[in-house]
Length: 289
Length: 169
Ligand SMILES: Cc1cc2nc3c(=O)[nH]c(=O)nc-3n(C[C@H](O)[C@H](O)[C@H](O)COP(=O)(O)OP(=O)(O)OC[C@H]3O[C@@H](n4cnc5c(N)ncnc54)[C@H](O)[C@@H]3O)c2cc1C
Ligand code: FES
Ligand code: FES
Image 1 (cartoon, rainbow over the protein chains, first blue to last red):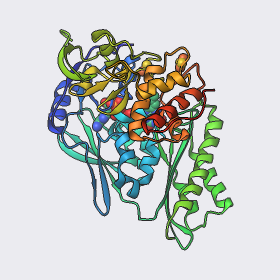
Image 2: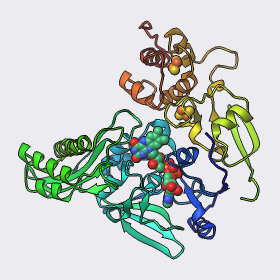
Image 3: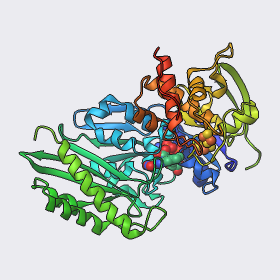
Image 4: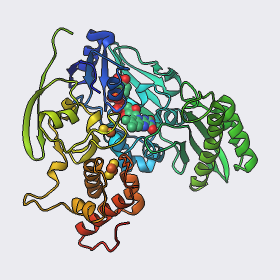
């Protein structure tokens, strides 16, 4: 399978990339790792006339860590996320998630920016960013604007990104030291998108959950935040009844489609199971509570 | 589009410098096989799943069916043709696949070998579980993987100066 013809551009800066996308219009698209876009172009589900390769764009490969915030450049690859000692220490949910995405070859090229910008409900990082309360930095002809991960996804492949805009970085509020985290993903095999998956980040004091955040992957047209489920676990020591109630609250907001991974009922049920597993794992990982 | 764009690319393939003009939509696997005649790299699924097209790029593994040749501009690529030593003796991995019967039809083998090569540089002494996870992007329809895992264990032992004691299944 050979993609349709296109003209290739390799800008050296964000400004140049935005300038190209603005002048070339609707038929131009950024190319990051190509691990979602090239398969779609081979199937002719996408046929952009111009590809703007971000590989040469300066400054998109940085990871900057401050005391309160970690900022990850859009072109940082999934392999880099896994290899980063800084992220393993301060944001271990990122490598835990990246290790459940695709396979080693795909992760060499696949980027965080491509995973977040894509808008495929099957992508794993968006729910993790919603769980973490991350903010996307979008650069466009009129300058930069910030959009919360929780507001970015509008429908399958439909996001807040405007034509001519690039996602340049994601800003993640640093979770408290000693927080517990988990990304639990049910998939049929390595390289498969989630049947259902859940991201959990929580903190605890004196054995009771102080803060909690939960988000779900691939059980609705967009990633979704399970607010009620998170509210139910706060203040508890995560006894079995609480886990069950949180799991039920998550199932109540899941709205999966039937597909090769299972019926809608099955996938909704699995969303509940993933939430239960992720809660228990995250709570078990809290340090110094 | 008025006329087809072609772009100059320069890359190092199996230690040789290569310069060519390519259409941007040319996939790296087609460039290697058709432009350079390096047909050791296979096309299995053509949908980014099977890993038969795996090559090494700047020390990492990628699927060459899911990469444009223009993306590899400036990079160093190694294909299965680079594995055997200059005097014709086999690389430890090739010897492992031979001794441990790590192939049957052989279609997945170039991808398995090139993935295993990078795996062993990242992790020179992997456990069985690490090997299985490390080759999880490579599918084999024949062997059941058991002897592929043993072949990689054989190579790891040899590269670490040990002898691999187990027999093939
Ligand atoms: C076999 C296989 C299995 C996979 N399994 C999973 C999985 O389990 N979970 C998962 O999450 N993903 C999976 N993926 C997808 C993979 O993670 C992709 O790498 C990722 O979704 C997209 O990243 P990319 O850098 O390759 O982006 P590309 O494919 O280059 O781009 C994807 C889309 O985002 C746009 N884009 C890219 N970067 C930007 C930017 N900075 N600003 C604005 N728009 C941008 C592009 O124009 C395009 O529309 C899989 C892929 C393969 C081939
Ligand atoms: S041919 Fe490239 S992954 Fe199958
Ligand atoms: S040996 Fe036949 S596919 Fe692996």
